[in-house]
Image (cartoon, rainbow, N blue to C red; front, side, top):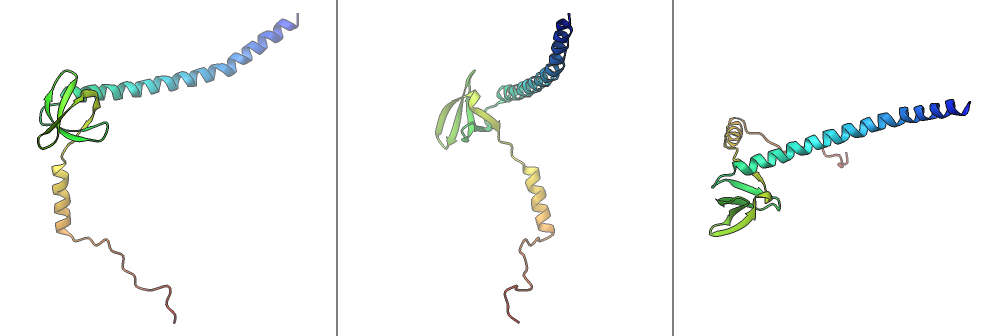
Length: 128
């Protein structure tokens, strides 16, 4: 008769130890899949919003301008007169010109000249 209560205690203790581990693993899998779904949706939105004339980066690092768009393929002009065909999945992101940011930087640099040089006043290796 004493064997059964011991067995129930051991099983209950195993469950108490195993349950938090399952909860942590489940939470990790949930948040990891959620992040992956958001990234996939952002990629789908990018591919659906591509237009002729957009400058893009491919997954291999090539820059080009879209000249034609099909269902699964895009034609990129990578040099004047050189057009290559790529799968839409190879388009990583759109290149956005930051004209406003460039104008702000030019205005700031014209207002105050900033010297990034370091002035040395004393030489540590001189003999007195």
